Structures are given as C-alpha cells and as structure tokens.
Image 1 (cartoon, rainbow, N blue to C red):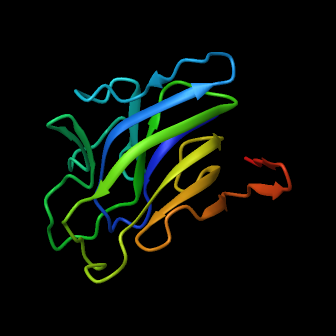
Image 2: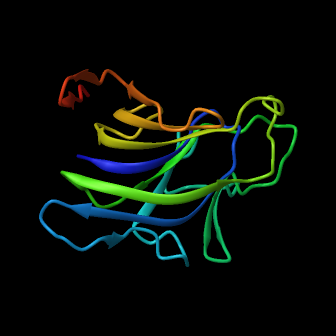
Length: 161
C-alpha cells in the first residue's frame, strides 16, 4: 500500500498547500489530488481518535487552500498526525505548492517550522509509518528521511512494515 501523506511532523507548523498533483508512469497526464474545496480523496489520522476523525479541526480547507494546523492556538500541545490519500499510487511523481502559516503552537513557539511529505507509505496507519519523508523544515527543505524501519540503497528504498 503506497499512499502519499502530508505530515504534521512535530505539531509545530501550519502548512498551507494550494496544489497537489501526481503523475504515474502509466499515464502522461497529471492527476489532481486536492480539489481546492474539501478533503475528497484524502483521510486524516490522529492516534488518539483514529482514521477520518479530526475533532479539533487540525486539517481545514479555506479559500481554496489546505491548512494543516488550521486549528486555533491554545495552551494544549498539538497531537502529531497526518492526512493521506485514499488512493494507492505506484511509480509516481508528486508536486505541490506550499507556504508556511503564521501560527506557532506550544511548546514549539520558537522552533523551526517543521512538516513533511511522506511517500512510499506502507503498513497500517500510525505515527510513524514505514515510508520516506521529504522534509519540509524552515532552512533545510528537501532532506530525505527513512522512517518506520524503511531501509535505503543506491537507486531505491525498501519499506519494512
């Protein structure tokens, strides 16, 4: 099972995405993953409540933009979680446009904003699944991390669930 996930990695960073598309090896055309209206084609996951439950409103769509950490800032620590595609992809490319929001959540008010895009996600929903993360952190965007037992070698990765 290979899903694409936007990750609320350290619960410190609002991320706002406007375009999310994928292109598979089987088709030349890009597939729009985010319709700019709602979360059709996606689900949320938070360990405390499970799949497709977001009682605190961490994930929101407003004015055609997807807001991760769209909830209000309170004194409570934000839970780590993510949103993921319902559709399974293989051998695909992904592109997205994003910008950082302005909110800061405790206890990370002074930390770098930190988020990520997970791909080659395998196994059950959990934080952290077996996958590769494209790091989205202020000042070092694009680092690659192998999570959840994933191993890498020249020319590819091998997910261990």
